[in-house]
Image 1 (cartoon, rainbow, N blue to C red):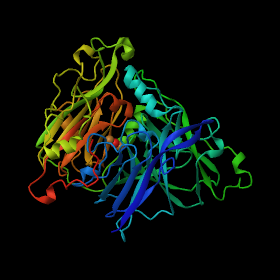
Image 2: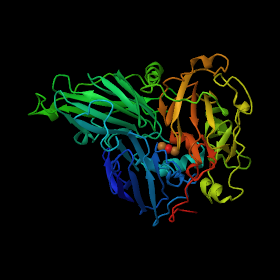
Image 3: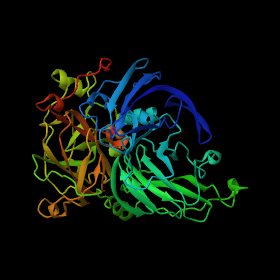
Image 4: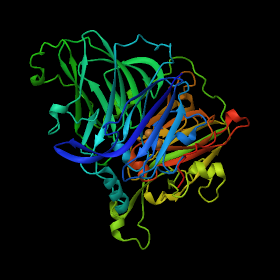
Length: 546
Ligand code: C2O
């Protein structure tokens, strides 16, 4: 078991995309940021030095952070931001996780450019549960804005309107050759005929679920969110922001050049989306075009339509754990949480320029009607640890305050969200079930729901309203997949289970940044257990307070 030391210098870096150079915030001048590679059981020590003019924090997405919530990273949840000119060293150990995770800024919309892959190989001396592939290639799907993403979200917050959609989807930082000024920089993945490549696909996009496919090649899914899955083959993946999917691809086609492509899966009703497509190239080293490959057009794949919910859900419901797993069968805490968008009436006295949402409203999103507000003087974790009163309350409702037809055509007067910093308290070791219920207020959308500090079993999902009488028959308590981010289907529900064995404060939120901006989050406060090994460690000496 090794310890890996890294320095992350957060800095403004000129980046040229789509014919235009702008200053992007990067880590060490790299965009996307550095790939970290470790073995299961290793420790990471990452010293983050903030040389940018924005506050920043780094989140290690999917890392369980057992007893080390101090290193989790979401701004004002576990820590106060690292201010310009300051630094913080994140220190944590990978315990029992193998596969692909990633890291990203967890402050405003900085993760648009501050992100990278975190690859966890098997324990030293250990093996993959499949033949070791010849190559491994991280594939980071992302989004690029021509304007500073921080300005995009600040403007949206000020006006109450929806923020601009991105100007391009990108693969490993490149928009690909369908976009202007991008052709010569298109990402190319080389393969030898006959060899197998492990593609570690990460959706690092901010606001779009994405389909991903490779022309003429089958993809064998073997893992997701750093958990192995029962292998299955598919021609198309769908990833919500936050999710990772590991696939094996074999170079078993005629040597040539093939496009890999990603495009939005945006089944939102009426919401704006960017229907462009990004490409990268899979190039056989023995391609017969070897003399003039750059002028040969690669073979283009067929991609599902942007609203192809059938393809998306038939993919997301194929995941199974490789074998029988220990899902909690008895439940101590049974929560039912509505997840959805909404609109706020213009606050009395507010200028109309602050209410440029539909019909003079402002966008607001909520869980069980509470639109989550971040504190500003303490992090929730610090306030909890030191017993500082007045920073949060623990009255997050276990069930929605009103019952109605959640996925019907609901009048918005039924559902005017309240704002609050409400947590839900869990005893150490509690067995928790959460029914996540999408709503159709204002608009029904997909929500990639991410829980920090935990992996959870997805035991069932479906469309419409969850029915506790009949839908329990759909529960898979044998081999459900273990994930850290669940794609809550549009106008549907997902049921997750986990055991609260990691003390701390853990945010659960929609991983579409536009939705978290509007408050689509809540947080669990998991109490310490009795022994020291069931309790949060002491905070690091350089822990950022406000
Ligand atoms: Cu990947 Cu709260 O984030």
